[in-house]
Image 1 (cartoon, rainbow, N blue to C red):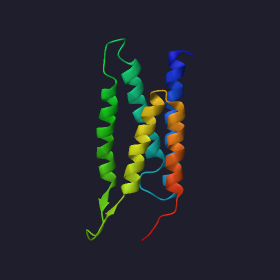
Image 2 (cartoon, rainbow, N blue to C red):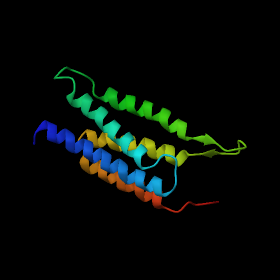
Image 3 (cartoon, helix red, strand yellow):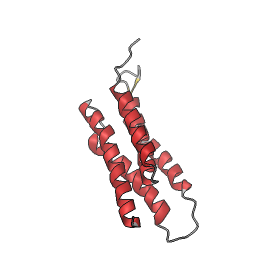
Image 4 (cartoon, rainbow, N blue to C red):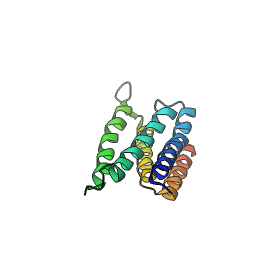
Length: 135
């Protein structure tokens, strides 16, 4: 398989898996929905691809990109978390976490870890479909 085709498939997989999680969040009426999750996963996948293929054979530490994505996505997730109206609680933790997990799935897809990224998506969507436990 040509490198360009391989990169394209990895990027498309990242987008599709992000869409799977984003669709659930959209249906649940959350602020970060389909487009946000597709873009997060695709962006993480693209950063991974650039770190692997984009430096023309130069010796680089590709793990730095993954670390940078994790830190950067933390800022996006923090923006989703909002204090309750009277400071009683916190809202948006699950949505922030789905953004974080979606970035990790995009990194995995971009790295060519196809089965792992698909399984992680299935696990994440399965968890999101569980009913809330109120106590």
